[in-house]
Image (cartoon, rainbow, N blue to C red; front, side):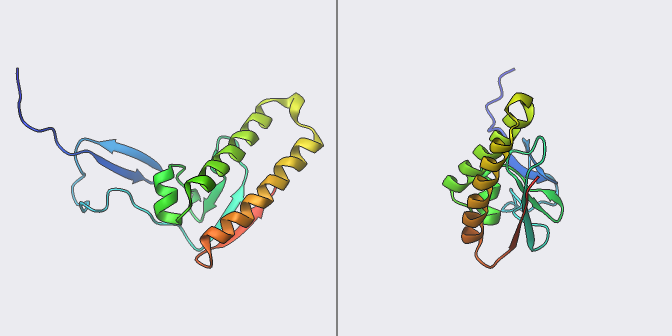
Length: 135
């Protein structure tokens, strides 16, 4: 069967902390609400957790890790997003490799985290309170 009709528009949305894709926009969702960019509360925590690559948490839990969301909801630069992801990936690597878990390795990650938190606070300005929880 040959169907020359245009395919339906795609929809990119957030449910509750993960992106999903659908061929059609769900009923009741405004056309310009394709990617909800809301943050739960006014405090964002920077902290490590196994399986979390972007180490940011709001009042609802880990924030979405998608760069689009981080740019639109928090106003982060691509450079900072990449650096946050590198730090999260390094913590995952350390956690998965017990022989690498030295006091120095943890100190190094902590120093990197503190520098990232300072940059993160600068990017956010006064919109949110940022806390850091070392592991």
